[in-house]
Image 1 (tube, rainbow over the protein chains, first blue to last red):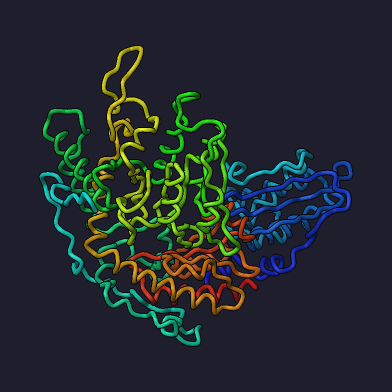
Image 2: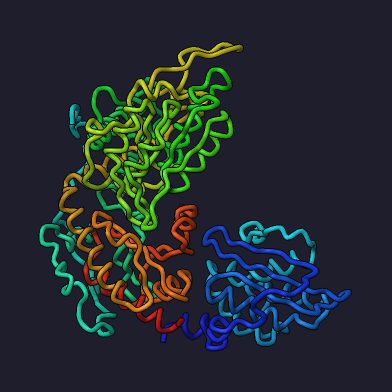
Length: 154
Length: 463
């Protein structure tokens, strides 16, 4: 088995890719945003139902690679029911781990640590962050505007 | 070819050593077929295309030192040639030779090196005009590649400004729906800047464009028709000869994107009803950042120069300037002289090997890949009918190209994944991103077997 199959495509990642959690639309989202990756055309849209400062519910739609789908799926599980500050802190830790600024052992990532292998594959980091970009933009505003990983990464 | 200009002098006063196809030795490990065991039997043999007996691939591989390396413990199988081919020693030596003996600025100094550099640059121009079959009515302008060449055309037709530019409000620009973004986005801008109308020659559901559809779009207002000689995303080879003829007959300027075709057996420019042809060096075994715009002199004359400044003027006062004649008119600033020399060496290399022999080999590899990939459950090959293609693009049910690409890289196989700068075509065909394997003269049937086996494995992992 190749190192990509060990490090990048752990079973939990493939399982989320095959059966993404919180996939679909919310009946009455209060916030939403779409992220696109111009180099491959991947699109992920995140819908939120915020209750004050709390993520009462979250869904996502779109298509992407296994890393993108699994990362977004795990993200929805991780932030659902938590407050916005916790979601933002988690995003910062996740991003810092992928960009090599934080050791995965030290970061409070929970199940998301299974995606830490992505940091060995620089061309795939934007795949893992696409859903998170959409989440951050959904939190920041509600105009439904598209965001791009190419811009957001720089 | 009405005006075949010989290779004499292409190296300037210090001739390069001639290319010898038999020189060098093959590194150990080449051709190791790590994936064949996964297949019921060789797809290549089943397709009857295993041998390419008239191309000395083993000897040719030795001319490309970059191929003799391992990636993640596997011999590199470089199948991303539609993006960038590798350079042979002959090209690398030409670059080094110029840098070590003749480098200086051109068309300026009276000193010996400047004269030698100028001679080398102009010899490269002559060599490349011969390579594409340009005639006496044609001129060749060096560019940084196809994208710049197409921008010089599209922008040159509006940059003179309202009332002066060749393109005007109400004109029609027809662009095929197979195009790379480089042959679409500049025309979108041209239409916006002039009030011209941009019309797309829509492909059918299988990604083919048809002459009768073009006929229906051609109007007296049609001023430009732009099409590719080979679609980089699918391998589709449109009947561009016929369509260029129809468009010119209707009074349009004709533009051919030859980026995917120029290193292959294609008609000489003199046989095409083509006003402008663009190509890149890095897709024909030449240096990156090189290329050319070749066209009829009278058509090139219509283009307002985009790069104003040194080397493209006849006279300059503080208030105004007179622009130089072609080709200098469109080559403002110091060009990539070393690159031009290397590009000419690449053209010589291709002709020494033989374009028809190269193409027979590539068509066989493509047929082998199409047969092997089509046999995998869940794989759909794009444009399977395009037997003249030198690449194969495919989609896999429920498996994303990026994931396939990563697992292929694990096995040392380099392919391209994504939209290949042709997003509208993918949208038109109802496809997401694709995986593309593209072949060059140094690729082998064993590498295609590895590709097919690795794709079959990736499907198993992800589905």
